[in-house]
Image (cartoon, rainbow, N blue to C red; front, side, top):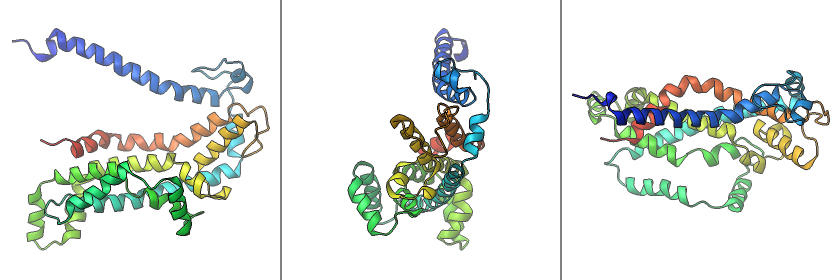
Length: 291
């Protein structure tokens, strides 16, 4: 009897799959490695096009330059605060909404699901949203970033499917023991949902960390901007030939200051991701696959 792992077709599949995945990894990592190399390279080497994957004229001067700018650290702190607060609020609202929608006996459940799905395809538009945020007095505040994006419908549907896959008997047994709805949610459901919760936290945190347009639109003070807007202004200033942020006219750092800022911006996500990566695939698959 020929086992599956010894068949010629399976061996060919493994080789082709390995080649494709290796190519994907290379294509994905190349831009980031190039940015890191540029951030550690001398400005003249970058201008001469000598920097690819290995730093040329190794230097930390640009990192020191960016670190000495108080605006960068103020915006960096804002990003951390916005991300933590927004993710916490989004998780509470998404979890509660998803848990309610997972109850098939709930009256009006189809209508509530329809409302959520409708927002995936139709929005009020940029100008109406701006008028709404302004009329509510949310401009120049964290709530202009947090509240409009508090629930992602994709995350909501994934979490709903996950809750639907949990054994109903567990909740029924808890209810017989006298536990109320909130007790069942916090003491039975959530402890069994660590995988999907970690996945949703990652989704929301990355989304809020990388977001810049909402802050750019609703914030008018530099000390309220997240670090992504700081980076955007650097890039815009380099494109238009104007200097932005700390004294960016220093030509010894003008070329790679954007690379340094990009590296410093992405570091927290790279640090956090390995701790939740093991939940990532499990959380999404358990919430999306039935059978």
